[in-house]
Length: 485
Image (cartoon, rainbow, N blue to C red; front, side):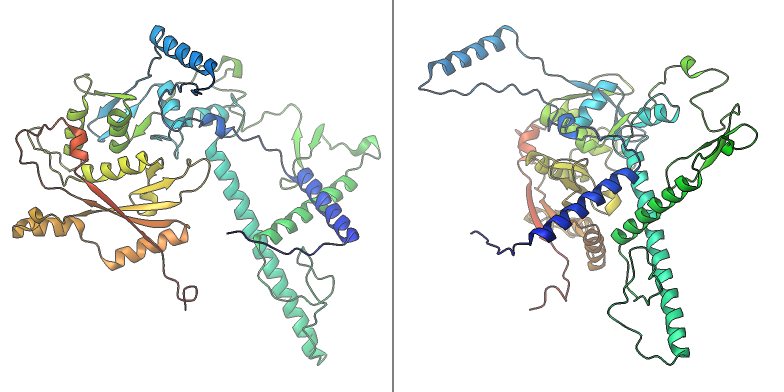
């Protein structure tokens, strides 16, 4: 199915005027915009979706004998010098029931290849060391936290500018109505009396309208250009006597920060990168990275069992934990207080249910992150949090449809308490996801009955996970004025 659209050609004079106007606007915006450092090349940094070493074979073309030779050479190379699979190390902290990665290379690899974990001193990406170096003046560039802070500050200023414009328009409106009331003039609203970009009507009568952030940004740009022009006209170096008294030096910064005067020979108060404890910047000692990467239990088990890219040491005994022992350990720490080591593995354990969903979506190629800040269990990203926002928010609910869970009243009450959700809860969660423009996915996990066959090995994790069934249901918020027939 193809779509066609009829476009009306624009006259040549109008097209030239529009092109000239857009070019001038871009030029003015580029001149007035403060200098910003270029963003990192995220496509190159996150070109690998998982921390795995993949060595694809060259294509085999039957009618081309050279392709057969290249395939044989590739096999021969792999047999002579087999590629090494990188396995990273971490340790389990029983106090926080989480996995900690302290090696710098492992931290960067796990974050850049799959967005696993979270920095213990950062919002998401472990960038504490870069921020600390930048604070001390040892490193240039901008971190993700600073970009977010700068964007929020700019948006706050634009909202203040929009409020100022609306207030100015209301004041002009009230003055015009008062003047018209005194002159007994009833023709107040005229189509030609429209406000300008800055909110000033040049003596004419404005109309009340809700200014957008785009208009506020244009007005702020216009005001900054006008202030720069006035400052350049007032500070023109007509005579050499324009220097400030007491040997001062006038330095003009961006239009937002007005002209400030720095006296030569004075000490800068806010310059920790120049003088630190009586020493210069060259004598600054090397900083130790005090941040570690914190993995959730689901992420750690997926890296250990699903990919084989991580080995976890027990923080107390300093021994490598095998996948079966790691599974039982995570199931124990999913409850508080953790039960003893002799507790049997239960199929309705909260860790098992959440890991089944995590493994399910990771196997489908989604980047799965924690959704606690939006009141859900998981967030699903198409490529990663640095490329776009999460498209879906997942809520995990266990389902007990097997007859085993309804044999006794005790089991019925236990299952009902685990899957009980109210309509108020669903309405609140759905409303939050609608506000942040995410689609809510209710994921039901069919919990199997406990294993009664003695021949079934508890170490066969694949057979255990295969007994679970995942059902997804997409929920959209019903808006009456948009979905009316």
